[in-house]
Amino acid sequence: MKTNDGKYLKEITSQLPLETVAGTRSCEVTFQGKSINVTGQQVKHFAAIKTNFLENTLFDLELRFPSDASDIVSCLAILGMRGIKFVPDIATHGNEQVEKLI
Image 1 (cartoon, rainbow, N blue to C red):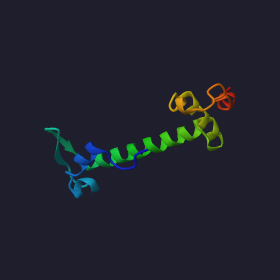
Image 2: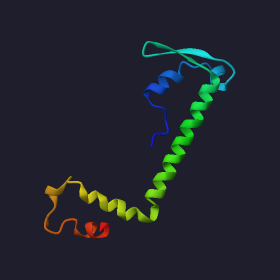
Image 3: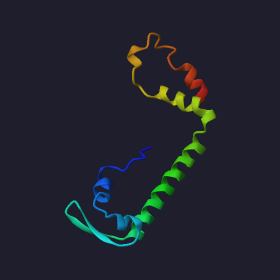
């Protein structure tokens, strides 16, 4: 998962004065030709929501795919058709992985 801001968020945050980031004043930024009024409270609220969203997403992924079940996730790769023409014995290719999934 990305931990760095993306292209568009960087474009907006690069225009924010430190006072707005600190939450002490509002400012106006331009994004794709549109003016946006931003308050310090909005900046802090967005940062909190972003952090909460990422933490919850990672938590849910760990619940669905625990580290002790990583072999099952690895077995799912057999369902993709990449590289199948390079397999020497196509008749038995993936049998072991499919058995684990079943």
